[in-house]
Structures are given as structure tokens and as C-alpha cells.
Image 1 (cartoon, rainbow, N blue to C red):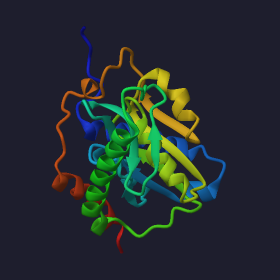
Image 2 (image 1 turned 180 degrees about the vertical axis):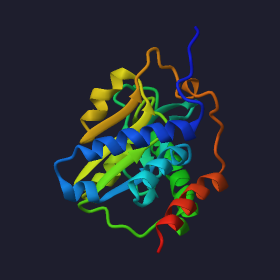
Image 3 (image 1 turned 60 degrees about the vertical axis):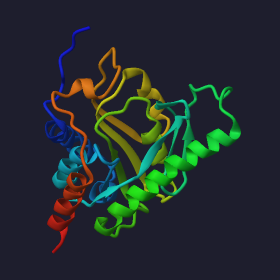
Length: 226
């Protein structure tokens, strides 16, 4: 099956998505909401996408740590996702008949532990913010199943922002109504079919190491500092 990548790399996708988000914020009828955005990335791949958005909006860049919960026999297959602070979303499309309650709990705890460990690495660089009443813009480099994104949104809702937007360069078209049930707005640059995976829509899609990911936080939040 042949296909053409949509983006050269995450930097290009982030710049294009930033223009879309900026345009949509400019259309808001709620001045207070437009003046008070916070951009949240899903690390690590979401940070190069989120950074240009935060820079264009002149707002803080933060993170939400959500990890996939995977089947014991197949670590590539997500059955849900959990955030570092314990918010969980289980896949509505997954059968748990062959997974015991103990296995399911163990998988959840393993994923949450990974999220907590990664959050500890990011924490020293995270800005002090109060999301209550803000516009929370949640960003990833692409959405496939939506599990980590929806778990992140659930965690943010508990902090009482005025609105939550889901933003990504690419997602499958059939997932948009599902995402729309959770977010006040869903902004996606492209919804190609067949989808298969996020990486196929980028010419370059390397894994980011932690030092690279931290660089995006350092740069944006140092730029905001007086």
C-alpha cells in the first residue's frame, strides 16, 4: 500500500498546528478564555508539536503524563491508559475475558509507575500554573486509539479549566466523534484513511530521548520568564 507522508517532521507539524490553534483562538467570543491558554504536551513526542503552539500563544508549556496500559501477552496492544495521578480510561473496544482482575491491576500499576517516574523527571522544569478557569490545550504528535489523550483530558478536567481542546496533526477520521465527547473542541490537521499508525505520516519520526524532551520545556518557559 502506497502513501505520501503529510509532514516532514514534528517541527513542521507543530508549526502548522500552531497556526490552526492561533486562528481558532482568534475566533473565540470569550475574551478571558482567549487571554488565558495553557498548552499541555503528552511527552515525549508531543513536546515538539506543543512548543510552537505555546510560543505563538505566548503561554506556559506544561505536560500531562499518561501511559498506555497493555495486555500482559502483547505489550503493543493498549487496553487503556493511566495518568501519573491515577486517572484511568479503559478501551471500549477491548475484551477483558482472557485477562484476570489481578493481571489487569498489575498492568495498570506498571503503566502508572512509568508515568510517575517520567513525571518526576519533568517536574523540576514545569512552570507553576493554576489551570482553573484557563483554556487547556492538550497536544500530541498524533492520535491513534485516543486512550492516552482521553486519559490526559480526564485528569485535566479535574483541575477545572474553563475549556479543554484536543489538538494533534493527524488522527483517524472515525475517532473524531469519540474525542469530541470529551473535549470542548478537537483540532486536527489531517484525518487520512487508512490510518494504521501515526509514524507513517511523517518523513522523519525519531523517538525523542528525555534530554531532548526537557529542552522544549526549558526553552519555552525560560522565554516566558521576565
